Image (tube, rainbow, N blue to C red; front, side, top):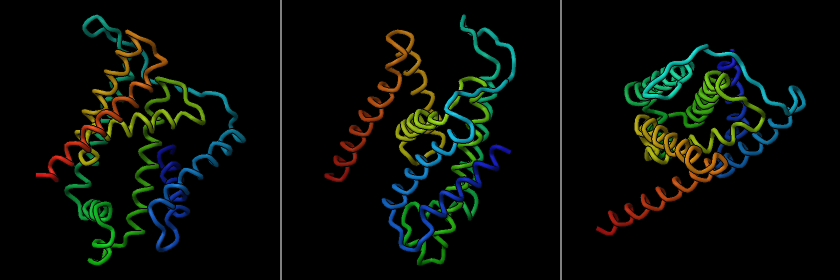
Length: 219
């Protein structure tokens, strides 16, 4: 139910952000951010500003001397299945290819008959559903509040940058690397620097990638 509700919320966000023909990506981005801030107020009015949690798979196992909660294996399984489904959707289905074409070149996609607005609304729906799914599987491991999406979005974007923004499986690998780095920072330095470490890693990689692109263009 949570996943379905979040998908509907995603569509509502999409209608507001890209509802009018000719809306530029920048305006859509600003509208989406504005709706996100508005949603904070709505959540606080209905549920308050406290943190919430839920029960997960009980118990734990020891792996190489470390105690791992059983629910982490649920998160891993859901993540792998989700990325496998996304990889199949975008590479093997006409609808997924149409969405990829719109993201690559919306004008060219429109010229060959693809409904760019419809693909955009579908993207918002998928994003909402994935956000709801993430909330469902992660809430038993950490309490969530109205502003928890900021950290999740930051880590998710950093993982996508690690993956080059074009491959689901590279994004998974980037997320694993980022998670290990963040936990090592928390364990050996201070947990307060985890987000700073993620930002620093993301910025360094973006600078390195931009330098490599300029080098290829120069050649």
